[in-house]
Length: 313
Length: 278
Image (tube, rainbow over all chains, first blue to last red; front, side):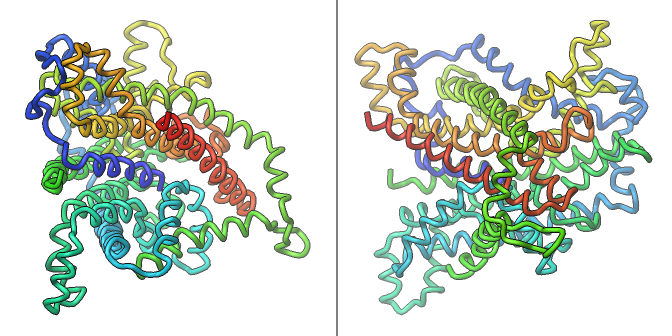
C-alpha cells in the first residue's frame, strides 16, 4: 500500500503539469541565455544514468550464469557458460511451473484490481465533479484525508477484518483493497471539472440522452487522458504490491510474483537451505520486463494524452 | 459514486475504526477481551523496542530524504536547463527504477551488496581487503538508504520537472531582459516556483520513511542478525501481529505511527504554505 501513496504524487505532478509538458527543444526561450548543449554537462549527468542502470545491467548479465558461475565470475561481466535460456526454462518449470502460476495471479490482481480501481475512481470522480448532492463536500474532505493515511496503518486491521469475513487467503483479499485509489478519484475529479464542459452535458440532457448514455458517449472520451494516467499508476501499484499479499496470503498458489520471488530468495537460508540464486535472478528479470515495457509504452501515450488535454491553456 | 463509497468504507474507514477499537482493548489471561483504555498506549511509550525503531526511521528520514530530494532537484534542474544532449533519455532512464517492484530492487541490491557473489565482494577481492561491508551493523542503514534513493530519486525528479515545465516563459524573457544569469534564474524563478512541489515531495517522503518496511524486511533474509524484528516501527507492528499474535499492541503501533505521520505532514504543509504567502 505504501507504493500506492507514492504513486499518487507523480500522478499529481503530472496532472499539474498538464499542458506544458513538451520537449525542451520545442519550447522557445527554454532559458534566457538559450544555452548551447554542453557535452561536459551531459557526461556529468551520465553518472545519474549509470547509477540508475547498474543494478538492472547487473541483473541482465547475471541471469545468464549458472549458480556456480555466479560465485566464480565477476559481477558485471559474462561467465564462460551462457545459460540464459536454460535459466528461463528452469524458472518457468521449477516446482511444476509455480512461477507461471504467480505470473497469472499477478495478472489477475492487476486486471481486476487496477481496472476496478480506475473504473470506480472515474465514476466517482466524475460524479463528484458534475453532480450536486448533499454531503458532496464532506465526501471530498474524507477522501482527501485518506490520501494522507499511511497504508500500513490500515494493513493489520484490514487483515483482521478480512479474516473474520473469511476473505484472507483468497484473491479477494488482494483485489478488494486495491479497488480504492483516493488519488485516482482526486485526479479524475480535477480533470473532469476542467475538461468536461457542463454546457455540453446540459445540451445532451436537453436532447433527451440519459445520464449513462451521456457519460459513455461524451464524457468518457473527454476524460480518457486522465483515465489512462490513473490506470497506469494503479497498474504499477498492483503489479508491485508486496505488503498486502504478504499479510493476506499464506497459500503459495495465490502468491503474486513479488511475494513468490522473496520466498525463493528466503530458501537460501535456514535449516533446509536450498539456494536457487540463479532462478531468483532470472525470475526477477522476468518480473520487471512486462512492467517496464508497459510503463515505457504507456508513458508515451500518457504524455501525449496529457498535452492533448491541455488545449485550453 | 455509490460503489466507490461502499468499497471505501470497507477498506479505509472500517479498518481505521477497528484499529482504534483494538488499541483500546487487551486479551487477558482471565476474562478474555477487556477494555483497558489507554493502557496499550502507555505500554508502548515505555517500550524500548518501539523507541529504537522510531529513532532509526527518524535518523533515516533526516539523512536519506534530504539527499534523495537534493539529487532529484539537481537532476530536474539539469534536465530542464536545455543544456543536456538527449534530455528525454535522461528523464526516462532516471525514472525507470520507479517501475521496478521494491522486492526486485531489494533482491538486486541485496545480491550486489552480498559477500558471496556481489559487486561488493568483487571490489573487496580486487582491493584485497574488506573495505565494503554493506551488511555490517554500522552500514546497514546506509545500504537501505541507497536502495530507497535508487527507487525514488527519478520519481521525485519527475515531480520537480513537471513543476518546472509550467513556469510561464515570459518570466524567463523578463529575466533575460534584466540580464539575469542562469544561477540567478534558478534562485529567483525556478526554486520559488518549485516550493509547492518540494512540499509535496517532502510530505510523501516522510510518510514513506515512517512506513519503511519492504526494504529492511526483504533484506532480513540476507542479514538476519543485523535487522531485528523491531528494526522499524512498521516491522514491529507486523511482527507483533503475525509472529506474536499481539494484535492489540500492533494496532496501537499502527495508530501512533499514523497520527505521528499525519501531524508531521500537516506541520510541513503549514510551514510550506506559510512561506508562500510571505
